[in-house]
Amino acid sequence: MSDDLPAAQGTFSSSAQAFWQGFTRPHAGTALGALLLTLAAWIFVAVSSTEARVRATDTARWLPNPQDDWCHLNVVSIQGAERHADGPGQTVVFVGASMLRAILPSDESLSSTFAPAHTLVLAGSAMNYEDEAAVVDKFGGNFAGWFVLCVNRHTMARDLRARDVAKKQRGLTVEFSSAILTEERRRAGLPVRSELGIPLLDHPRIYLPTLGGWTHLMRRPRQEGALPLARSRPITGKEIYAMLPAPIAAAQARNFELLGRIAARLQANGRARLAIVECPFADEALPELHTVAWQAERAEFVRRREAWAQAQGVPWLDVTEELKLRVEDFEDPMHIDSSAVRVRFANAVARRLAELNKINR
Amino acid sequence: MSAPCPKSFGEPEPAGVRRARLAGRIMQSLALAALLFLAIYYLLMSGEAVAFRYQGF
Image (cartoon, rainbow over all chains, first blue to last red; front, side, top):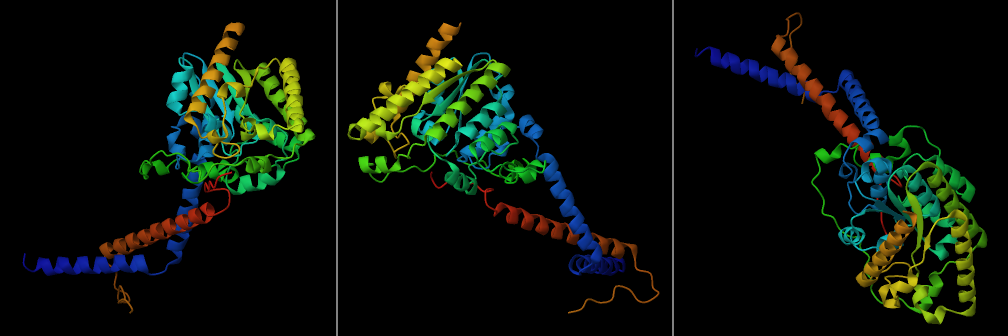
């Protein structure tokens, strides 16, 4: 027995030495093995990165950053109406840019305003109308309720090509395959993304940060938080005027046509109804900017939108008067920073939709 | 610093030692693969339009 112990120690020592040798000495086999393992791991991530898997798993799994509004709207759009609008009552889906998010109250407050209807907000910073068309199409219109699209007369008449590059650099983009997005971007003269057919490579912003929806197993849940939109001082009329984009009639006409195509697709393919709601800019709250030219331009837009609404059979909600806007209610020329205005907006839209529900019943 | 030769010429290496060396190599492969995987991940994540960079719009 006493002789066995040193012998066992010797065997252990030589085994440990051999293990260390195997671990530290370069070897062609281990390098090849590492390459194959890495390849296998990336193939696993690529295979996990599919829209079918996004639809089959929890939304939170794909959202590493709760402040990432675009990631949220992309994932929810992919999961679609079957997942997010299949409740017993109506669902109201708001779609629009950051000005929509800014003018809506918190999710809880919005839900209680529209109750018993269920509400969903798909808002993304710098979202343009081509993006809105893609989101509506991807989400799908086969549900009982409303799509409420946020528009603004200034953004409808704006050339967004220069902004498109900055949007891409900041990751503020639609991240799913969409024939509608391709078609609408072509019509708008915007570059169209070519796709390889591999979601991980085509839309890395959705699939890469979570490694195909697996990183939730390792990460700690992050606290929800609002985007930092702090105002240092009140905005001035001059700043508002400077921020108003020069209107381009062709852009406005193109966007009216785009909205018409959204309406036509929904009427042809789904049960959901479409309503357009205007989110005002701060110029509405500043009488000194209401020059004769401003009033003429606004009146012309009102005439066009009424003609559009009549032709399409789609309600166009302009609740600006009911908001009782003041310049102080704005964070910047486009974003509301007033809980009172948010509540008035939600109440006004809810009331209008309820009236429309009665008419259509 | 060189490690001692694992076996003398003509003398068979004990099976336990062979298995230990193989285990070491497997561990080396796994460690290299993990490093390579992470390197590719961070390389891709540092690319434009992948990470969320909200700066206000």
